[in-house]
Every structure is written in structure tokens, then in C-alpha cells.
Amino acid sequence: MALQKNDQALMLKAAQISLFGNIILFTAKFTALLLVRSLAIATDLGITVAGLVVSVILYHAVKVSNRPADFSHNYGYGKIEHICEAVEGIVLIGIALVMSVQAAIHIAHPFEIGTPWLGFGFSVFSAAVNFIGAAWILSLAADCRSPAVRAEGVHYQLEGCISSTIAAAFLLAVFLMPTPLKRWTVYLDPFATLVVSAWIAFPSFQMARHAFLKLLDASLEEGSKLEVMKQLGKYLGRCCEFRDIRSRNSGRKKFVECSVVLPRGMPFPEAHHIADEIERDLRDSIPECEAAVRIIPCAEDCALLASSQKCPYFFGGRSS
Image (tube, rainbow, N blue to C red; front, side, top):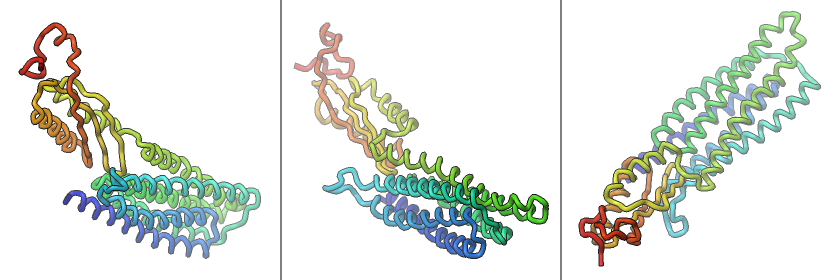
């Protein structure tokens, strides 16, 4: 319980950092848009607005996801983290598509940006805020293992790369202004917008796809699956077999279920003790794991018992 409370505190801290950072970014980018009138900055501002909305959603999602399981939600509320992750991905894809269309229009009808050096300064500041925020949020995500917090950290990281790309475009415009190539600078802003839109779309699609797979009860990742097999393998000398091994994710929570076949003649307290041991080992070896093991009595139809040999898993031999 103490660990869960600590995780919740880390998640709330990450949400607060994200919200505060997005407020700073919104103020800076909105001011830059009024002064510079750049399509690329407008795209960057749209991403920040989406991030600001998601930060508010994330703050409330963190509180909901940490509610204990109840009668209405037997497995808890962890999946709200995946919903938050999916919403962020979908919104970013929408922004990328809209701004791509706007960039194409501005390539056909370009206009000159009067103060590229000012856009460069604002973009560098935005990139710095994003990269610092990303490092902070991703470190908290690693500690609390929250997919929603990690998605927000990736969003900050992506936004930092986008602001850096826009800053590079403005810097190039500053260098080209005094040269004969000045007439080409009108295309830098819409071209940077196209690059930024593509940069947003692909990782955002992967983010949304990953979230939807988790919402469809995808099984655990390969590392956790191997750990499940490793822990069950320790009991192969005491159990007849394992059946119906299942797993799924719910936010940062992981659920593992399986059935263990034990000799029919094994006393119930002993069988129950083995099931408890398996559940404990799974919980201890996989972070945020809840395990449920069901006991199935052996059907006594194996080749050993058919040939009147003793059951190798139960010293009492064949039950009557």
C-alpha cells in the first residue's frame, strides 16, 4: 500500500510538472505567434494547447487510476491511463493533418516573415523548456511505471525536437535574408511546418496504436512473459502441469492468471500452499503484478498411473 501511495505521488508530481510546463510554453508560443505570425509557430502552439488539455486530463486520470478495485470495476481503474495515452495520440494526429493542409496552402501562396530572429529566440526557449521537462517527466515515469506519464514525457521530448526544427528554419532564414537567396525564405516556414507535421504524425500514431492494443487486453510484454514462465518453471517438479496461462495490462498494473494441476490425493492445505507460493513469486518478480492461481485436481489418466506406477508429484501415490 505504501508503494502504491508513493507511485501515486510520483504520478501527480509528473502531471503537475507537465501542466506548469505547458502553461509556460503556451504563454511563450502565443506571444511569439502574435509577434512573428509564423505558421510553424502556430503548429507548435497547437501541439502545446493539446498538451495543456492532456495535462489536465492526466492530472485527474492519475487520481482515478489509483482507486482500488470495487464492485463496478473488479480489476481497478488502471485502463484510464491507456485512454489518456490514446486521446493524446489522436489529438496530435489531427493537428498534424490540419497543419499539413495549411502548409500546402502557404507553399502555393507564400508570405514573408518579418522578424525571423525573434522566432528563433522563442523556439530555442521552447525547446529548452521541453527537453528539461521531458527528462524530468520520463525519470518519474521510470519510477512509477505509468504508461500515461511516459506518454506525456515522450510528448515533451517530441515537442522539443519540433521546436528545435523550427528554430533551425528561423536561423537559416536569418542567414539568407542579406543574400540573393532571400526570395526563398518565404518557403522555409511552410516547409518547416510540413516536416514538423510528419514528425508529429508517425510517433503519435504509434502511441495511439499502443494504447488501443492495451485497451483490447493485450498480454504482457515479452520480458514479463518470460518472467512468468521462469517462475512457473520452478514448480514443475511439484505440479503435474500448468494450464490456461493468461496475462493482461491495466495501466501500470499487470494481471496473471493460470491453473495448476495437482495430484488428486494431495491434501487441500498442501495444494493451497503451493498455489499461494506461486502467486507470491509472481507478485515479487513482476512489478505491480496481481496473480491468481486456480487448483485443478489431476484426472489420473496419465501413462504412469495407467501402468500402476506411483505419481511422481505426490508421495501418497494414487488416491482411492
